[in-house]
Image 1 (spheres, one colour):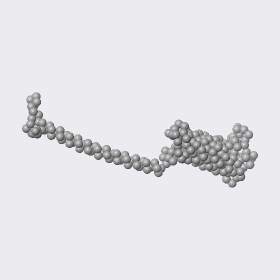
Image 2: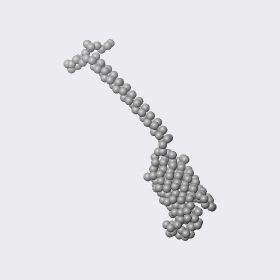
Image 3: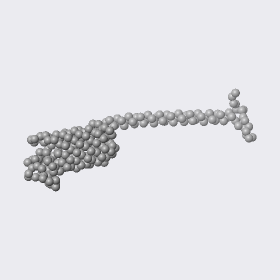
Image 4: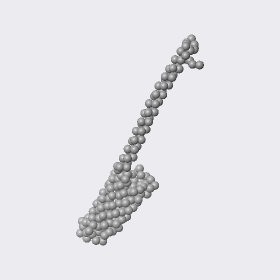
Length: 217
C-alpha cells in the first residue's frame, strides 16, 4: 500500500507525517545524486587535463635537452697533461663539454722535450683543451657507460730546449665512464684511449690514454 498525506503516526504525543519525511529524503537523495554527478564530471575533466599534461611533458622530453648540470674535476692524459677542468653535461641526451688546463711535466706530444723532474711541472709545457663526450647508453644504473669523445688541444712551451714551441692537436677517443653512486649523485669517473693528431706536424698520430674524475653540481 502507498503512504498518503493522511498517513501519520502518533509518537510521544506528536504526529509524524511519513509521506512528508519520505518526500524530503527523496529530495535529499536527488540532491546527492546531482552532486555526485558533478564531482564525477570534475574528476573526469581533471583526469583528461592530467593526461594532456603528461603528453606535453613527454613531447618536451623528446625535443629538448633536459637536466643540465655543471661539473668540475681533475684528469691526466698525454695531450691534456695533469689538468683541472670545468664543464657542463646533460642527461638527455647524455652529452658533456669540458674546458681543461694542464701541465705536461711528462712527455708532451710533438714537443720532444721532457723535464727531468716533476718539480719542473710549472715551467713545463702547458695544455688547454676543449672536450666533447657522448654516452649512447647507460647500463646498470650508471655503473658502465660506453663513451665516445672528440677533443682539441693547444699545446705550448716556453723552453728553448723544446724543438717545437706550440702544437694544435685533434683527438678522437673511445672509452668507458662510471657513476659509482648512481645516476642521481654527483661523482663520475672515466677512462679513454685514442689517437692524437698534430696538425701540420710529422710523426702523427700519437696514442693518448686519459683518466678523469669529476663532481657534478
